[in-house]
Image 1 (cartoon, rainbow, N blue to C red):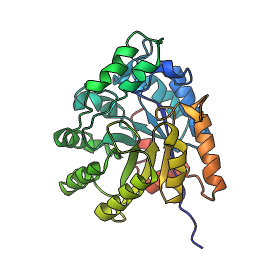
Image 2 (image 1 turned 90 degrees about the vertical axis):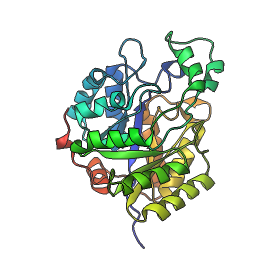
Image 3 (image 1 turned 135 degrees about the horizontal axis):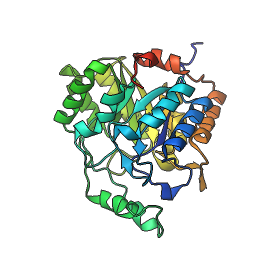
Image 4 (image 1 turned 180 degrees about the vertical axis):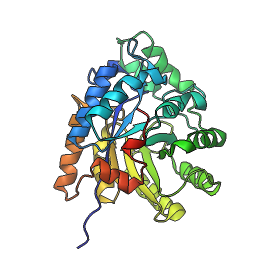
Length: 310
C-alpha cells in the first residue's frame, strides 16, 4: 500500500480583511502577530501566511515597516516558511502591495490570479459597536470595491519579484483564475511546480462545497498535469470540513484566523494555534503525516530560509 504524501499546513495568522472587533483573538499588534505565528508553527504549521496592520490603529497596512518587527522575531524563533501577502489592500497599486515582498524577499508570496468582487459588506449590519473608528466604513465600503489584479498587474509583480526567486501561492478564487495562470505560465512568467491555493466561500468567488473543489481539481489536472501542488482555503464554517476533504484528496490545507474566527459552531477560536492543532489532530487520525518546514520546502521547491532578507 502506497504511503500518503505528507500534508502541509499553512496558517493565515492575521488578515487584511477581518477586523479585531469580531474577535479579540485576532492579532493586530506586532507583538501579538509574532507570538501567535510562532505558536502556530509550534502547533504544526509549516507555512505562515502573514499580513500586517498598523500597530496603533489596527488598520490594514502594506508598509514594510509594519512587517519588520514580527518577521525578525518569527525568524529567530521558528524555522517555518514565511509567506507574505501581496494583497493587503483593496485600493493600493500593485507596486505598493508588493513592497513588503521586495523589502524582505520571503520564500513565498500570495498572488491573486485575477480581479474579483471581494466583498464582506454584509458584516457591517451585524455589529453595533466597533473597536476602531475606521472599521465600520471599511467593512461597509467593500460592497463597492473590486480587488484588482489585471494581467498587467500580475505580470508586473512577477517580473519585479523574479530576482528574489519567490514561490507564489497562486490564490484561485474561481475556475477562470486557473486559466489566467495557465496563460501567464505560457507567457513565461511562472515556472512549475506551481502551488495553487483554492480559495472557497468568499463572496464574489466560488462557493465552498465539495463539488466545486472536485471541479477545481479536475480543471487543474487538465491544465497543469503533474506540475502543480495544491491546497484549500475555505472561509468560515467550511474551513475545517473542506480542509479535511482536501487532505484526503492528496492536497494541502490552510487554516487560521484570517479565514475563520471559529474553532467550532458558535465558539470563537482562542488562537491560530488552536485551529492548527485541531486540523493536525484530525488529519493525523485519518492517517496522514504532517510536513515539517523543510519537507514543505522540498515539496514546493522553495529557495530556503537562508535566502530571505529578514
